[in-house]
Image (cartoon, rainbow, N blue to C red; front, side, top):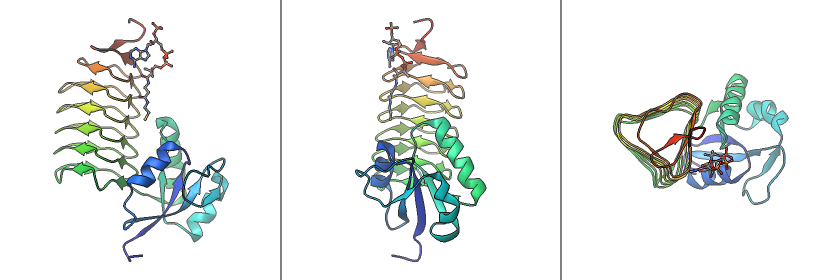
Length: 210
Ligand SMILES: CC(C)(COP(=O)(O)OP(=O)(O)OC[C@H]1O[C@@H](n2cnc3c(N)ncnc32)[C@H](O)[C@@H]1OP(=O)(O)O)[C@@H](O)C(=O)NCCC(=O)NCCS
């Protein structure tokens, strides 16, 4: 293992954890195992136990943690917990992703296989740009937001903290999606989305009004 390898505990053992493990560069991140309420033998990492083992792991086995939970609220909460314990937040960027040198990706974020992040875009702490999602120029993807596979943001889109865009959603330029909003799978967002609103359809409308 190279001297530059970061020892990381994975938090979460589900499908999203598998995708993140699959995307992570083993030359940079060495996963010592995963922590989850229960083991899942399909994840090819050692099972280390539940959250109660984290403090001991921080002292003995890993300097960094990566929270691989798809749910935005849970991911934020665990990122905050492990940061308080003294872990660094590891960042996963797939070798097949293309992140512009003029873009930034904050700690704890995941940019998975085939994703694109364009120039002057910012991916916030703990955010997820999932498989084959694209973020064009001058976008902001807020902390703990999640762009599901195949989401496309045109230029200048702001996605608020904790917001979720479902698989295949598209957003036209300069639209703002408020914090903790939900954009349904396949939606085409052409107007601003208020905080905590759920929108679906093409063009996307509030689910209550649809
Ligand atoms: C938008 C969403 C969050 C709503 O979930 P929900 O609250 O459980 O909604 P329901 O399934 O009860 O559907 C409520 C209504 O909205 C409609 N609806 C739900 N999702 C829709 C979508 N993506 N596009 C269009 N209509 C949708 C339903 O047809 C239903 O309409 P009806 O009341 O006329 O029958 C969900 O359907 C969705 O799109 N999730 C994305 C999941 C995803 O992409 N995950 C990726 C994980 S990486």
